[in-house]
Length: 135
Image (cartoon, rainbow, N blue to C red; front, top):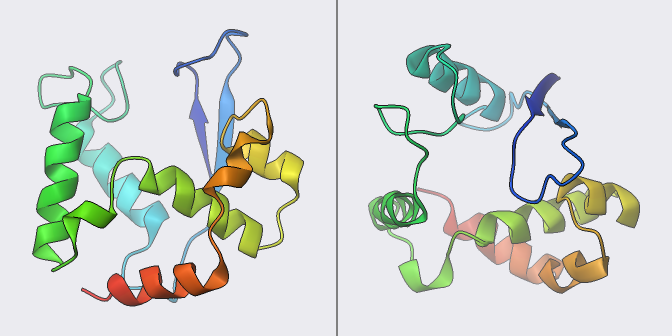
C-alpha cells in the first residue's frame, strides 16, 4: 500500500493535506502504484503540481481532455461515453462495490454532501465498463 499526500487542491478551504492510499495491483496489466512511481521518476522532484506539462505548468482541462480522448481512441472506445468526470464516477462506484461506507466514499472524493450517490452506477454498468476496457 502506498500513500499519496496532496497538500494543495481545489476546494481546500481548511488548508489541510489529503491522503489517498493506493494498493498495488498484481492481478492487472498495469499497477497504478508502479505507474505513479514511474511518472514521478520522470517528472522529477521540482516543486509544483503533480500532473504538469514539461515546463511544470499545471495540466489544463483542455490538454487533459485531449489526452483522454487520444487514449480512448487508441483503445477503440466510444469517446462520447467517457469524460473527465468518469474518473470520479468510477472511483465512487468501485469504492461502493468494495464495501466502503458512505463516509469513506465522501472523504475519498472530498464530498461534503451525499452528492456522490448520483455518481454510483449499478453492477451491470460497471461490468460493461470493465468489458470496454479490454484494450
